Amino acid sequence: MIDEKGVQLGIMSVKEALREADARELDLVEVAPKANPPVCRIMDYSKYRYEQKKRAKEAKKKQHVITLKEIKLSPKIDRHDFDYKLKHIKDFLEEGHKVKVSIVFKGREAEHPEFAYELLKEIIESTRELCAEDYSPQQCKIENRTLTLTLTPGKISH
Image (cartoon, rainbow, N blue to C red; front, top):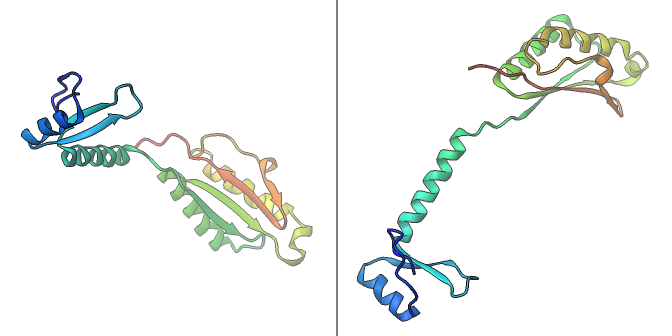
């Protein structure tokens, strides 16, 4: 038996432990039920739960979540639209998000993948300083009628 201050009270029966907890207006909490004999602690259980939640919330604040953002393009994209999408890619990388660039082929566009590779080459050149590694258009994956490349952000100092 251990009290709320961590002082070991020794081995006692359940009735004695409950009486001791009631006398101190605290709770009797089983800490290690599989130990022989089981270990219990006299504590304010609601305060303990509150502190646990507070610690968990604090730990959650400190963690950084990286999400995957997807930008879809067409091989026949207009210059202004491409620049607009490129700006979004750069913004996402600066914020620390991974970016999946997808170029979707429609109809006969799949017969000329060189247009898509040119777009990817330009994206890679424009985002080189923001990425963690150097990319090349050969690292792309072709699935069905989609050409994809995932860009990973580099170390950004905020």
